[in-house]
Amino acid sequence: MDDANESHAEANTPSATAPEQFPISLRGFENEDRAKNVGNLIGSYIRELSRYIDLSGLDGVTIAFDYAQALQELDRGFETSHRLTPTDGDAVGIAMTPRVKRDGKVKSHIVIMAELAGFLEDPEGEQFKWALHTLAHECAHVEITARFDTAFPGVLLAKAYDNMLDGLRWKVILACWEEYAANWISATVGENRIEADETVFLRRLEKARSEANTLIKEYRIHGDVNRILTEVFSVYGDLMKFACYQLGTMRGRALTLDDLPRTKAALTGHWFEPHFHRLNQLCQDIADSYSTWTDQEPFEALGSLAEAIVVENGVIVTRRAGNDLWVDIPFSSETMPD
Image 1 (cartoon, helix red, strand yellow):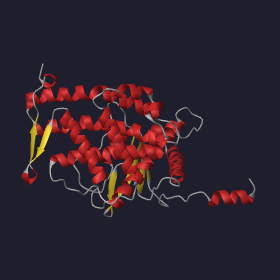
Image 2: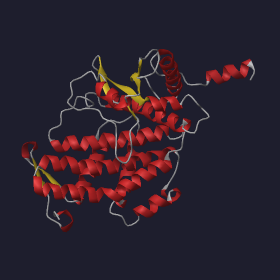
Image 3: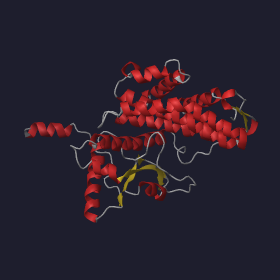
Image 4: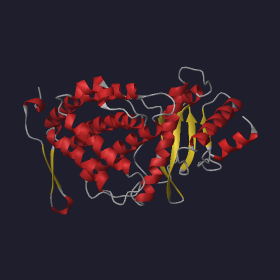
C-alpha cells in the first residue's frame, strides 16, 4: 500500500472509544511477565474493538484464573447483597460484564476467565474465533449499558420497584434486551454462534414447562408464594433470554427461521411459538430505535410478555391497591404432587 492509500485507510478508520487508560487486573498468573503479556494483548483487542463498539463506559477489565472468586470480589461501588456467580446449567459462563458505580456514574467492568484470554494469543488456534466473539459480546454489553443509562438515568442500579412483580419483570426485561442486543452487535465478530445459540435455546424450550411444573408441585408442599413466584419467573425468563441470544444473532447475521430448520420444526405447534414471534418483534422494535428511546414502554412490553407466559403456565398474579399482589396457582393435573 502506498503512502496515499495508507493515509486514506487511516482517515476512514473509526477512532477508538475506550478510555485512554483503563485498569486491567490479572489474577492467578504464574509470573508477572506472563500476566503483563496477556494484559497488553487483551488491552489491544479491546482498544481495536472500541473503534466499532462504544466502550466509553468501560470501567476496567479483570482476567482471572479464579473467575468465580473474581466475580464475588469485584468492587461494584455500591452496597448490594447480590453475589455475582458464573452462569451454569444449559450455558456455562466464562465472561460477564457487571454494572458498577464510579463517582456516581454507571459504568461496566468486564470479567473474563484467563483461559479464554489465552485463546486469543493464537490467531490460528481452533478456539481463537470463539474467544474473539466472546470478548466482542462483552464489549457490546458496555455499549448497551451506557446507551440505556443515557436514555433513562437513575434506573440502572438505582430504581426501587413498587412491588416484587415489577422487580421480576425488569430482571427479565434487561436480560432479554441486553443479550439480544449484545449478540446483534457482535454477531459478525469471530465465530458464527448461531448453531450454539440454537442448541441452547432448543434445550431450554424442551425443558422449561416441565421444570416450572415441578417447582409448582414443590410449592404445594412448602407454600412459599415469594419463592415460587421468583422460581417460575426465573424458568420462563431464562427461556425468553436464550431465545433472545438466538434472535440477536439472527438479526446480526440476517437469518430467518427458514435458515434454521431445527428451530422452525421445534416451534411448530409448540405453546411457545406465538411468544417467540412476539419476543422477536418486541426486540426488533427496541433495536430499530436504538439509543433514541424516549420512554420505557417498549421495554415494559417485554415484561408484560414474561408475565403473560407465567400466567398462561399456571401462576396468576393480580395487582391490588397499594401495590399489593395476589397470587393464585390453580390446581391442575400437571402441577399436583405425585
